[in-house]
Image 1 (cartoon, rainbow over the protein chains, first blue to last red):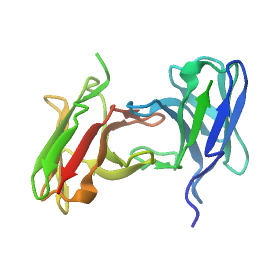
Image 2: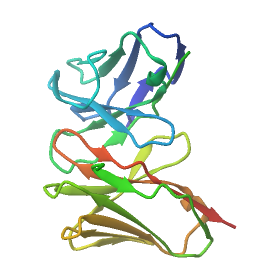
Image 3: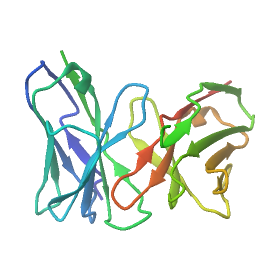
Length: 113
Length: 108
């Protein structure tokens, strides 16, 4: 039973570029959430996707966008990269219900130069 | 005020010691609470859920105090393998709110 998989694991971009991160949820899960974790901080909620719709969004600018596909996989896109976007981007999958356990992927570590 | 506050530590304790972490939260309407563990440069993993009645899982005990709006995690008989960052988490239908984490280092 495959867990949450993310790609790429590491990437380096320069300011102003765009990046797409990908996530495949754990088998059977229908909900994908994205989190940004800066060094020394806890994960910060970016947004959640369920039934191919963004259900809620955290305090992130419109440069951050996402998508969920019919097979429940998801993408996170970040445009016009800033140095401050350097972080570990974590995808978490779950069932769409209360008090659910989040299962995280290993993350995509983005460095913006 | 932050929604979830934790002492970042680090807590350096000898093997076999008992250590406790607290976490305070500001939203009194919060309904679900968790402790996640995160090893260095790895993803967070659920350690345990926290219930009003308190719950125990082996050497780990979690407590919730709704009146004072804090949750706690107690680790007994610390092992070297317990060294990690412990994240306090408030659950919700859509988003989970994570604390900054408390670093624990268990020393031989």
